[in-house]
Image 1 (tube, one colour):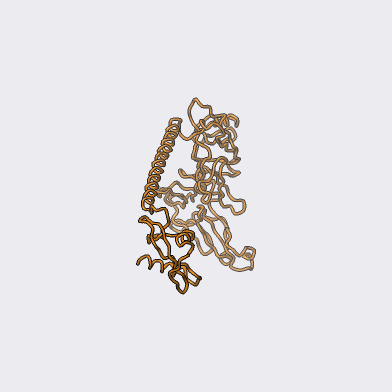
Image 2 (cartoon, rainbow, N blue to C red):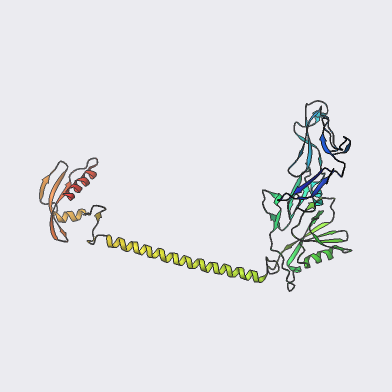
Length: 379
């Protein structure tokens, strides 16, 4: 609006949702000024003061001053005492709120033509008792979309009500009362000259009704999503929030045919997944059997152990005792071992061998003995 100072929200594409606060100076306002005296006002092009933005004033001699449009859409004027003397001395040594507009951001947001409100869809906004800042609260039967960002609003914990005329939804739902609460942006029907009991029954029987607002003798039916939720004594009346409590056929997402199709999809997915698992297990079993058979074909057929990579047979002490007739015939003597004659069986018959027996153990004797055996085997 030309000549008017106003605040408004924008959607994700940058389009205006409508003003939630305006100076009401259409055609005459020129600019907003914050002068050295701490006054914030709207002036005309010729310099005439049209309206003062903030009601509270403060002396620039006693206070540092600033005005900030905060994250919640409220323009606040802050002051900080310059000294501990006179008037400023009664203020804390911190930035304190002196004045702000709009006076109730929760209620003012409902004046917009579009949008969700300060606290997002399906939630309620109310001013804090101490600092007057907006506080968001969820509705009974709803949870936060993101508890770390309550401005995203809430979502219902129960399925959407079925509008099948053959189903009676009135005894499968309940109404939860919220005093001094309204959702100005979600009306689709209004009834006048009715009492609260009639308003309750109407909402319970109406599958589109998510909340009924009753005030004096008027009843408003509201649909999801609920927008511009506000809780404040100035609102009056009460909000009757409908939540699902019973038959899942009455409260469901989509119709029965869609649900049956989803079941078929789930069953088909399970069967397909099971078939793929069985095929995978069969392939793994074949691979394991193939590797085991391959190892079996590569293993020595004699039935005794060999040293890996050397094709050298391993004998037990008992076998060496039998081969040397209990180490009976000595054929050689070394510094650390004695050599005995022995006879062992093989695929080509009886073979005469030399069996070296350690007489005493020294450092790395086992490695030396192994190297000696390896040299004899190569020769």
